[in-house]
Amino acid sequence: MTDIMMIGPYPEWDLEDLERTYRVHKLWQVEDKDALIASHAGTIRAIATRGELGASAALMAKLPKLEIVSCYGVGTDAIDLAYARANGIRVTNTPDVLTEDVADIGIGLLLAVARQIPQADAYVRDGRWRKANMPLVTRVCGKRLGIVGMGRVGAAVAKRASAFDCDIAYFDVRKRDDLPYDFCSDLVELARTSEFLIVTLAGGDSTKHIIDATVLAALGPDGIVINISRGSTVDETALLTALESGAIKGAGLDVFWNEPTIDERFLRLSNVVLQPHHASGTVETRKAMGQLVRDNLAAHFGARPLLTPVV
Image (cartoon, rainbow, N blue to C red; front, side):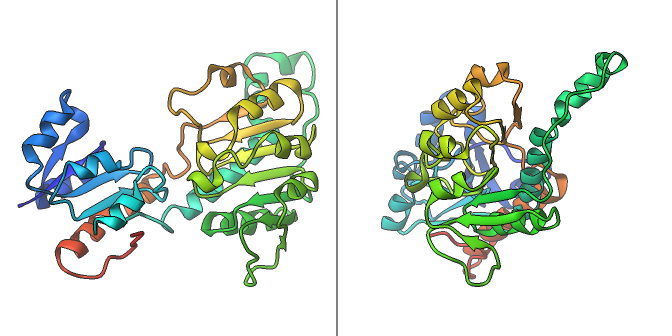
């Protein structure tokens, strides 16, 4: 049996299948992780990880027989791709299969913040409706929507927002000729001319804190920002200041800089809707993600082309 190391848990249906096929070493279950790594360093040929857990250069360097890192998730910013590439280690992820669910949550969060759905639920439950009507909220349909990052998820969000008759523009490194939406090469200008910003960028150094105080100021007091990308893309200090001061109207967040131990200031705010990094958290998508992880491992060890290579 081939030895693989799992950095963190997968759903039971994935783990059962992996354990039928491989000798699985579960790093998250042991206190002395270094001892586990050292005792199996000469046999481990694969790492199965999750996007937020990744695989560092330090870890990969301890596994001289390592051939592949298979990531459960799209984001690979926590995997040292440069080290993997330099050392001939293949890396795969699970794109496409989670696109639709993430886009759904992007629109869901926008509706939740603008229409104050969590607050409306509380308004009914705690009896305030019996005394007075709830204050008016913000319309979504027909508004100017800026999408920051027009990749798979960004395009899926735009498709959904089109059904709301939103006026859609986007920021990215280049214009996409296959899409009808307005391209804006200046992120601050996109924010200035939008009422809503939905962030769908990949993580990593090139996008770290790209949504900063300047962008938020340009979005303005009627603006709502939605982040379904990576916590690193938003400067949370600037975001918290903007939310607390009313510099923007609100935010919907599925991801955070220091998740799951997020800044407690978020918990005290009534103009933000919080999600536990769960945009792809449907049974259907998680099963498809796990299958793709397993299929990539099987392809590699069967000397077949990888289905979704990153490196």
